Amino acid sequence: MAFDLARIETIVVDSVALLRSVIGEVMTLRTDTPSLFIDLEGYQLGRHGSISVMTIYAPPKEKVYLVDIHRLGADAFSTVNVDGKSLKSILESSVILKVFFDIRHDSDALFSHYSIAIGGARDVQLMELGTRTGSKDFLASLAECVEKDSTISAKEKKTWEMTKLNTRRLYDPALGGRYEIFNDRPIKPEIVKYCVGDVALLPGLFIAYNTKLCRPGEKFWEVQILEATKKRIQLSQSPNFDGTSQANARGPWTREAIEEAINQWNDDIMDNAMNEEGSDFDFDFEPIFHDFDDDDDDDWHDDGPTSCRDIIPDCDYHYYYSD
Image (tube, rainbow, N blue to C red; front, top):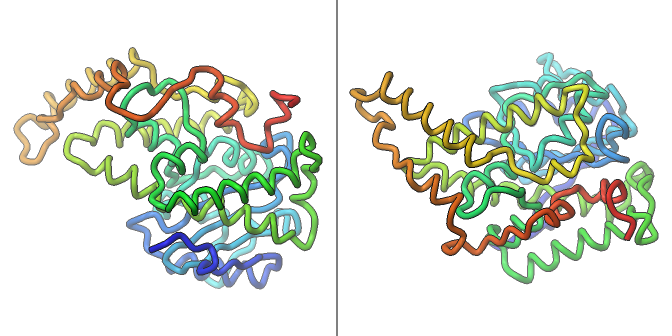
């Protein structure tokens, strides 16, 4: 099926009554597979800024909910429906799976401003890194993931890229924009389209990387990605977290750390599962080392520290660059 934003119904949630209805819809979704794909936008998103909009894409319903945090404030998360469920309880649930791309800024903002500790999270950025062959030193941006791994056509990718660029001109002061535009009400159509575009391609990317993780012998990386996601959330909640650090461009795994993790994995299998039917004892460890040593079999190009600019969210460019 061709990628078509027009088929996705977009609902701006700017009242408590509508929010209660949306919570009810979300609670009917399956929990055995991710049904919620989430992204936040705001002014200097994080503990030192504010949240303007939370975008929630529910593919089973072909709906995107733009929750107006700027207008609703704390009510956006404390409002409960008839069953006592709230957006806060959904975000914190370990049973309701939620997918983000680089959860750190979103988690930082939600925890700092609304005391929300995200649970049940999957991070597509880490999924890409874990399933990537070749260097795992630097993280990929959403645009890089879309270009390399999305199944939409080249024309659709170009349209998606142009939407992001045109919207950046509205909010980036370096391009004549202003960050406060995310707080203009009613929300501008360009901002709505931008928000929808940031979540619309996440399901396809999630499927692409999750398919790799479901292959025989990939359980190790599935575990590593889940643990790294939890650590990202914990780090984003810590007093010393710096969302503007250039170190955020690097992945969480060094060769030494992976070697240690593999040794521990091997020991655990030997101790607990060597004689169990269906165990992972026959896990092939060698490809993990190969991933760190050889880039020849993959089209990924790690261009070193300059990749930092690629993975920094658009709203944070001004922390690093003046051009």
